[in-house]
Image (cartoon, rainbow, N blue to C red; front, top):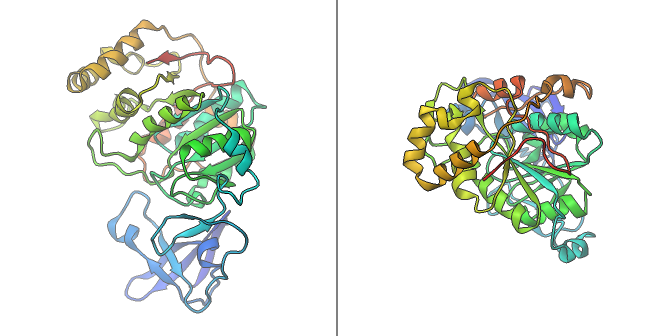
Length: 367
């Protein structure tokens, strides 16, 4: 290892001299491998670089062979990233050794808490901007699912937006949050009853996986989150993925990923919050030829959604520019690694923002 480039919570970015390849940027999760210093020998995983993945650009430090980290101290027997060389033992909020075990055991509901669900990690900053515009004092918790990057530490967005959050919860195989939970269900209960959140935001991490097919996308699990919120007595709010700039036709207007997640996977109703004043092709998918083709392919779920859309009339509410809202709390970097470039456009133009607060949303479409 040659140098330290930058650091954020849980991560040290370093430069490593690799024989026959030269200088390679690498990320070290210090809780897993220790803190690398210049001169250390490191074992690297260079898969992301070799494959040119969307989240590529970095190798990952697997180990410091000459200076292994000490065993993790403290209680906890929940293992995340199970049966991989990087598996991590954490204290789950829902396990018996947790000081919150009794509260999670007794909890049966999240008490109508609004939960905003998005299929892309980069929506997090825009959603927080919308919330702060309407309810600046609301306590907002972030819940990470395990469809993208498993370590929460990987996210630049979460690192920069932490002052706006009352806490983070990592669920399933993901880890690194303020609280660890076994399932999305206990993660939501922890957000409400341990972090005392008024609102929760749920997304996967950076580095989503897609195949160009309706079902082969890791963000489809957003529909399952809607189901979990409904089962726990919460209020599911879907953050639609909208675009007038994505070069892929399947993502123009309402993305086919949103159609699948909220129109087919979700078995419970959800509010779909849409900014007013959008271009007609975005504001009314029933007038979009792309929507017509998808509706014919999906049959009843899309017809049901299109009918619900046309039964409602958007209000005149317009969200403030997300950048202006968040600048009041300082600059931040939107993490779009592994996501299409249009994600940056949606955040900039405000299309991904919905104003959600503990009361009624100002603009909602019920499906």
